[in-house]
Image 1 (cartoon, helix red, strand yellow):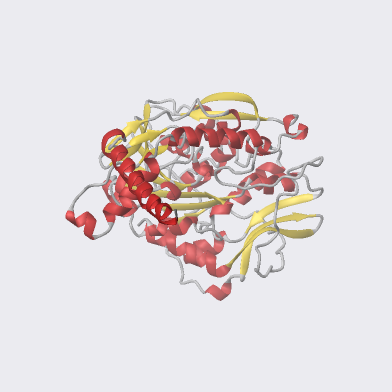
Image 2 (tube, rainbow, N blue to C red):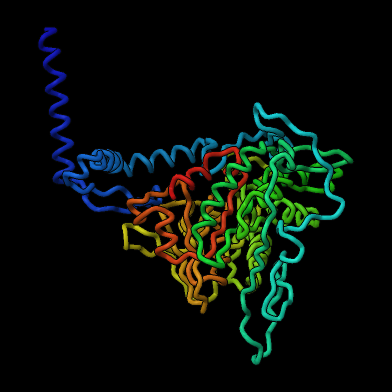
Length: 482
């Protein structure tokens, strides 16, 4: 009997391999397909050649093909998603939050420092509010051909006389002195000042900040003459909600931007989103959702206005976008912990579209694209924020606008940049969108450096959530994709 048992397993294994071969050869699709459940392209059958076998590319591609094509895969993924929604387990795109059910469940979500990292004394807030863009005084902000300053936030449209010339982009790129690491604290980060005392919301080591700046520099070096790279880190809403619920809160601020600016190339511009949105929140402005991890489109617009203004563009006023309002909006915090507190403090979601003709494309194969909706109307209720661009996806997407502009830009981002992309449509003919977690050079048609050259990218924007900044491997994926 034992001998028979030993013989059965090789036979079963052989039959299994034959079944897989029959399925791959006859029934499974050979071309790339789009998965609605995963919002990405499924792998196609790899090229068969002596070279692909020799360098191992065939086996790697064939493995990816089998993983993407097993029978019933789409049903299994759909069932898994439904089960996750049913039990409301905290497992979504960018953030894992464990929310305690108390009177204010969002106030206890923060760690004050990183494990194993020495916390430096919390610096007091600056007596003079820091400039939003970390630039020398003579070059901060922007100007048109007449030298007037660009607006720093949403403003009403103003009709200009017809005889005035078109605005000319004017970028002042200063030459920076050679930085010294010891001139900066060993630990920098985001802080809150309340009742005469400071507390660290998040801290990063100086070495990690300088290391990430090197990644930014490698991309800044790829840009043509006059091209710029703009960088910002966006705090998650938990930080802002905590400060809003802290009695006596006087300021939210950060100090790592000065270090990034000092060690970056001359054409790198750095913006403090913490300062911009912290000040706006203290003024009572609606810049963060209460039931979701993200900033509101209005908060996004405040930062967008500062960033494009700093590199010489006139930002598009908020009122110039087509706005769709959805309420009540109960986001991912509510989805994973549906308390009465959050239900009674639902959000208002405004979705912005450019008013001029535009199309949104996703690369499906080298030289091939498919058009997808800019706003994914079929998104589930709690994920409505991610209707922009269909949510974080890959490998490469393009928002093409008929706005008279001739420049192209690239935005390197996570889900926090989804609302940022449509706003850039007023300044660029093509806005290219890239999330490094979903990049595939074989599908996109080359490395990121190749695509920057092919699509004649002039400016790069790096807009990332705090959890994907200095203590994460997110930006190092960007480096590896060069």
